[in-house]
Image (cartoon, rainbow, N blue to C red; front, top):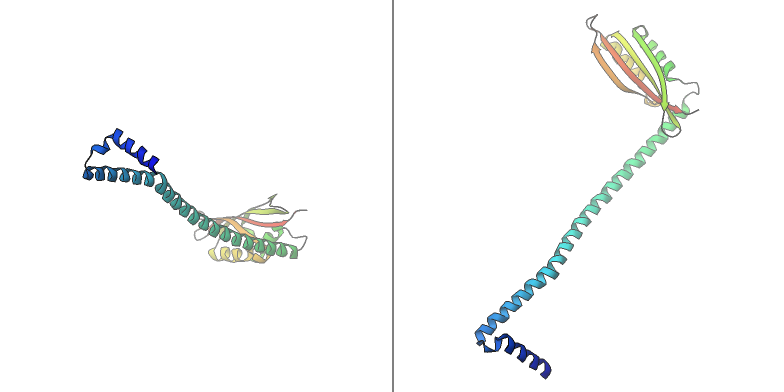
Length: 191
């Protein structure tokens, strides 16, 4: 302890602090303590507070990410179930099923076969074991009721047939009739 006391006395003498009055020594000591406190806050406490805030933000973001992952997981499972349902429906269809023949039959049933101006079938590579079949159909001079009847017969969730695109315009030759362009699609098992 005396060695420490001797060192502190030498430092006080060299710095000129020993010549100061008691009140001045208190002010200098308060200044030193204030600087030490500011240095402690700046180099230790502030970085800890910033790290804590950043960790809280990261935690909130990770919770949101987990929520989104769970939501996507639910959607994925629903889509998987729908895919299984679609495959079951496709298996129930006759092996001889063609979209072209289906559309032609439904056009006959809806009494719009005479209004067909073009009917073009095509197939394209699908997803996995499925291929997409498509019929592009152009009808002219349809009444609104004929169009409604035909659309009701064409779209068939049980047969996995959907109208992918539809364009309806008023016919310029015969008032009160419509020209319609349809793109009808379905999927089938690749052969």
